[in-house]
Figure 1: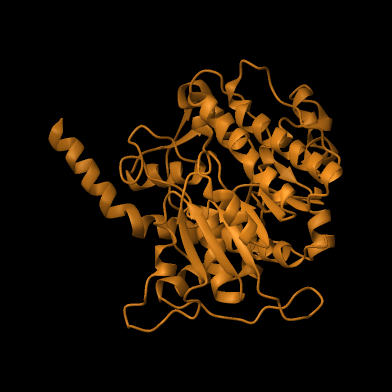
Figure 2: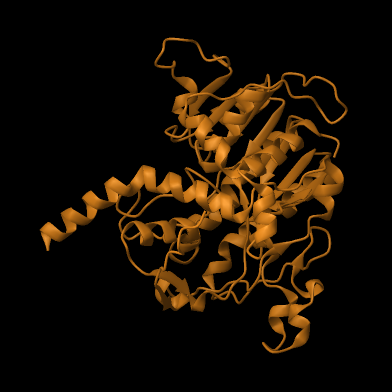
Length: 409
């Protein structure tokens, strides 16, 4: 069992996913260099380099069949790309949408065959009510569950859907894996940690700055949530409960599992832009919100003064760690841009019932020790790569949307 805090969490296996923090020095940024830009350039050029990967013991990877639930989403699409390019594995891609992975199943424009032709199969189904799910899990050596509602704005406004999606809908996945002796990699969230111990101290208390009062550790940190009336915790509570169920299945019935707790994985295809490829009144996650403001030349909205501290990791670094988990079943000179900001309250931005953690900063000891992994892309480079993608993808569409709104007014 492993839980990784990602950062990750390795429990039977819980892995906490570490990430690049917001306090990176200029020197660190220079040392990281160009790494954060490479992946998207390769993809835009239509080339995905193929490398023969080996396991942690240096042996060739044996082909396996992976049932990936939620393969059509942000993380799933990047993971599918990596698996096709660098492993011999077959992916049974389960989702209700395939827009983000369609390029992996289509023939290239030059008429050549993909090197992975036939190794990714899309199955359009909803895990809530489709009897085909168990047969797909039975066909697989490994199941990866990425399916979830994971947009903070929804936790307040759609608490029932949030709880059902993250707990009730995940129950059959855990059940089928346990009953059929299949390994499970389940994606949870860093939100299961809840509030830091330090957040309960007075704001000027010196201990709030001590790492032991805010750094989150997979096997030590308590999971402290807010009052029941704060619907924002519906997501974290549902995610924690399914973690506890998975852990219990491992303890009582021998389920082999890895739980991954991502801390803000960032990159292309992550989110929607309101009014373009998502609802006009929708509220995506933080970087997409900032992208939307920048594209519309609006002030950046800082919730409750922007005082919360978060950790970010570039999606391609994170996917590299996930591949290690799959294998390791044992365990410039330009002037600064002046962007205005406007302070908004969490109530105004998210609605009634919102509550949050002051810091989400993971300890990376376990994942460093067990997988030898650490993120390589600097905050500067991951932001540049992601925002460049957002601008290329959405700038013209946002202009058209704004023009329509002006004409209609």
